[in-house]
Length: 114
Length: 116
Image (cartoon, rainbow over all chains, first blue to last red; front, side):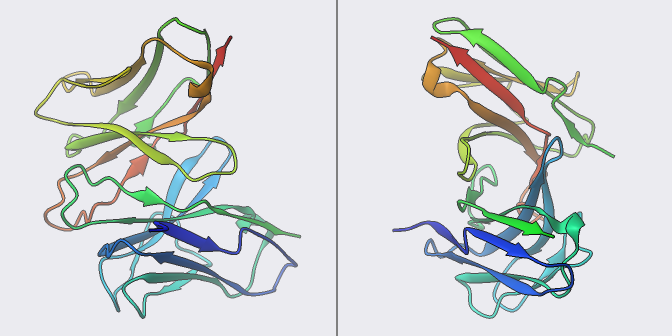
């Protein structure tokens, strides 16, 4: 039982390049989320999904797209990376039955955009 | 509009003493409150939670207190241990029903350092 995994762990991009971050969970959770963490800003929600085939915008969605073609996977895409997207990205999942809406997080992806 | 605020960026405590981390919120619709712990190069891990119908929840060395009228919650760690050194995030959520879909709003985090 791996929980939530993220690929890759590190990535360096040049401005304008594109990439996809992969999140996978093996807990059969309905809900999945993408956050970014920046110094002094806490974790901010980028996009989320409440089930296979559904996505919705979070607090800071601009410049990102997501897809959830399978229940266990949630992909975050950057079509044209900008230096402002340098951050640590976390994926999380939670069960629709969670008592306190507790979410389980992956280990993160550190992205640098030059 | 920061709905959840942790006003202390850092806290330094001696081993064996109490650590008190504070969090304030503005949204009266929040029903659930959580604390997460984060070590460097790792993802946040769930620590303890409390619902708005309670004012205290304990789990071993960790106790969370909620003051709804003041829109304030705190995490007490007693006794503090060097292994508790980490970043602590408070988070809040509305009821899972409706359109909240389990979304969490996080504070900025407090770096706790426990000295041996």
